[in-house]
Length: 211
Image 1 (cartoon, rainbow, N blue to C red):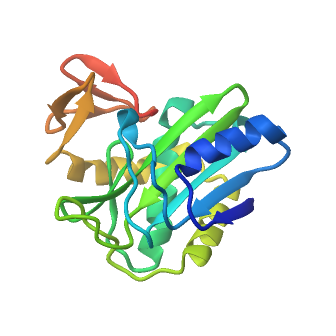
Image 2: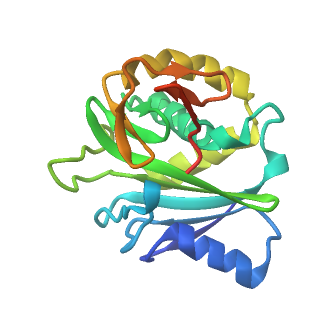
């Protein structure tokens, strides 16, 4: 993975897509910064944070992903692998369905994933510093370079979706105390059914995680 570090950018996700449009895809690339001014969150919301946090977006060929991964649940896959890396560094971070990082009951970051032809783009934001009282921050000190290296090394190993899902379905029980946004409406996850493809069923509707 080629990593390009920027001092500041409006959005790592937007920058990366424009970079690929202008230069074409030739290798896996990650754009990383500790400050973005107009970051993209889920459902088109902004996620800018403050200077000193971790923001990165990367692009892969879809064929670089595990063969058994439902592409609609790539956000879960990418998020859970980062969660594992952080847990290995003694963080208590957990993953709320489908793509939100939490410490206890406060969100500290999230993931968005988009697809363009044969490419899959993933953007992740993580609070390393306090943003405001509504959001939490990571509970350990990290070296972003080391975390990114560990993360991309783990991605390259291509752990199967089956393996990741078996762990995630246990952790999904934590999500039941929270809500998710479905069709712009807040829906309780208390009675949600988690399917093996990473989707959930709520109110007789099947919902996938891709955002």
